[in-house]
Length: 390
Image (tube, rainbow, N blue to C red; front, side, top):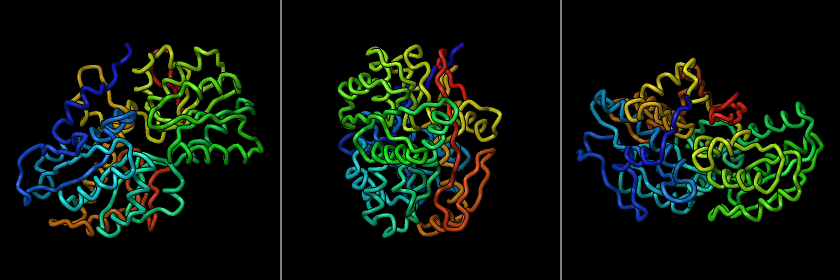
């Protein structure tokens, strides 16, 4: 039987105590005195096109923090996880960050969404000036990786590695030479496009067609028509879940026969929910974390155990939830290493000296000055039943 997917309403139920309203009016989960809590901040989109993924990242972090609080917290202090909505806007993410650091006294930050938010925050100097660590960014943009900010600890590999693996499959294994791209007009889309062109150029192949769409509206109608008319052998979907799903449905309805492949910005569960497993069948997606249902891995078994109490029977959490959970585990590890009275600088130092850590079959490596903690990539495809083949 096909398992049900984690639904947005479930995410909203779990996060309703921590996610800010669009006007950034916060509601604290529990009344706690400042002396008995550790504030951990997060800025993600909980409204707009990318809200489902943003909520998933926040939910994943909340799951692990909830586990720690249920066991008495850290040295007697409970974790107060504060989440602010940035609606995928970089400037709003920066405002949220300042609020979390200056008004809420957050000791560290976890799992922001997107290259736009991370770049805005990194370039502002707020992280280095505050001496605070940001653990995890939901983006594979090379601009965040080539000269990594010492305060940002990446938990995923980059678009360059994802697209290299996908293009190797298409050109080396399948003999494809005519490749097109659907590109969202934001920092992540631009970064993924550059990575795609580099992977093709390495093989002396020129991108046959690229069709841009507005990342804010998510309107892929015009781009779909352009790509359907060209009908290359394969189309790379450099977009987030909702516009990607709309494109897949429209493209096939328009008679496009290209093989379709996406990047890890796409949550396959959301695609299926938007357009059904029947319409999503055959979409390939590169993944940068282990499959959330791969119980052969201890890390995933522990993740599922912690996720179990908030999931209805038969449901299982998404890659985005897993990503948020991973960042929370690293945050707690850093807090434990930072001592009984952790400071931002002590936590940052704990992250910087964490080295190689095995979370149970999934390796994160921050050895030396390394800030790119993972090299994991695997290719998957949505099956007719709505599961993933790998």
